[in-house]
Each structure stands twice: as structure tokens, then as C-alpha cells.
Length: 255
Image (tube, rainbow, N blue to C red; front, side, top):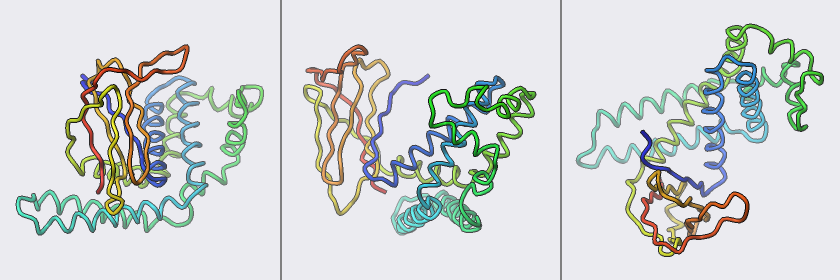
């Protein structure tokens, strides 16, 4: 059972993009598990949104650079006492394997999907509200009427284009999240601010509160400082910052 809610805020554009990719990978995997037409629609939309992210940047190169940087940081730990060298070497070997796999990928990620006319027709309509309605895309409507097992097999085939990226993204973000232990802090009257050392960049700020906390955390910041505000949710109007002192757990992930 979930005991905590964790709020995350990326502090640079590279990590922001990778967090969005992680979200889309998880969402698409969840949709792939379902049999309904709506599950297939959601899964395909996720695949096309992932493809759109890759069309805007060379994320394969960015991901390799990030893994190589993290590997250098981890290699320095080998000299420190108390380090589990077996676990460290296992992790470094896993990173080397993923980096080699990414290097082996030729051309742009998902290039075959971009050249698929069926997918292109759906992708073009996704910018229009309701644009993938049955009468707009009869070929899509026909595909959605195929047996669930057949649809899932095709979706898995398309999604497989991102396997190496998904694995590397998951490992990279896990290492960042686990790079420092969380410390206990208090947001006085719902407000907390902390300065950062620009020479040791923080990649993600993580705030954890008990699942029954009546307020949500809003995090904002840059490379010099960040703030956390705890707000009372009001669905019909603007949220209001609480005047209560809110204990929480904080991690500034800097690996």
C-alpha cells in the first residue's frame, strides 16, 4: 500500500524531457495491458507522443552522454571504503551494455514509424480535438475492430522501437533519484526555500509527504535556489497556500 506521495521537479531541460518520456513509457505499457478499443487508442497515442518527442531533439545522444557522465561518477566510488564493489561493477556493466546498445542504433530513433503511412495519418489528426474520430480515419476504425490479441501484437511491435531508450532512461533516472538520502524538513506556514550550489548542479528536487497529507506540494526553481509551497486544493477556484507547518522529506538529487 502506498504510504507517501512524491512530488518531483526537474531543474534542467534535459531531465524534464526524460521525465516526460518515462511518464509516456509507463502510460503506454499500462494501456498495452488492456483489451478494449480505448486501451488500444491510448497505447497508440502514447507511442505517437513518444515519437513526437524524439522528432524534436537528438535524445539518443543526450541519453548516452548522461549515462557516460553517471558512469564516471560511479567509477570514483570504487576507491571509497564501504562500497559494495560487486554491486557497483554489476551496475557499471549494465550501463556499458546500454551505452553500447544505444551506439548500435542506426539513424533516428523510430525512423520506421515516421515512414509508416498509417501511423502518419493518425499522428496528423492528433492535434485536432476529436480528430481521430471513426469517420475521420476509417482505416484506423477498421484496425481497431481487429481482435485484441492482433492489435496488441502490432502495438508491441511498434513500441519495441523504444526498448533500449526506455531501459536506459529508467536506469538513468533511478540512479539520479537514489543518489542522495531524503532528509526531514519543515515548510513553515506552508513555505520552504533552499539555496543550491551552482557548481554541483541539482537535477531533480523530490518532496515526499504522507499519503493522507491534506495539501499538495508545488515546487519551482532553477540552478541557484528552489521553493516548495504546500497548497490547499480547491477545484472550483485558485488553490490557497496553507498557514500550517508541514513536515516533509526532501531530496536534492545531484549525481
